[in-house]
View 1 (cartoon, rainbow, N blue to C red):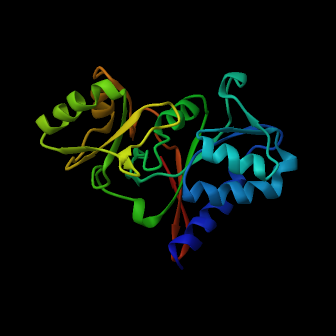
View 2 (view 1 turned 90 degrees about the horizontal axis):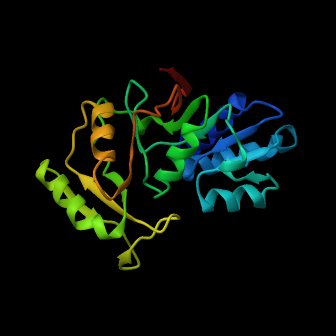
Length: 223
């Protein structure tokens, strides 16, 4: 199966975690787009969605699924999102699509996080994928120097030759050369650096379930 077919497979499998009559938390990215397409087949059974990005909001609305502001919803039964990496404990690296801050907000108000990914995303230790960090622009150079002091390399993510601007008006620093052996401690430390809005390690809001697309079908990992 192609990677695209694996994404469609897990997107469809995630429907069984959607609670009828409730509002579902919806993430961002190519795998989630497959889930949104699948969700449209049961849109009459749910109240709507809380979305983690402008791109997902546009896709949901185009398919006739109402989108609520996160401030209008006290809690969500489930949040369904992809990952750039996920380890065997359910810790993830996310933010390849630059939506990490809103993803972390929606994850924090959800009772369950279901990660949907293809098997290439499962790793023994986080860090092979460049770690996204959303930063306030005036802090960019200093935050990058702090990562360099850890032995990593860091670069501002560009779009059309200019720093990419997130949905929140901030910049993204992508960090390479890390091996994150203690994701909770790493997330806790970097989150406290002045100017860091969100670090793309999801350890405090980790996945409880991962639906992994494999050539043998969907494999369910529980954490």
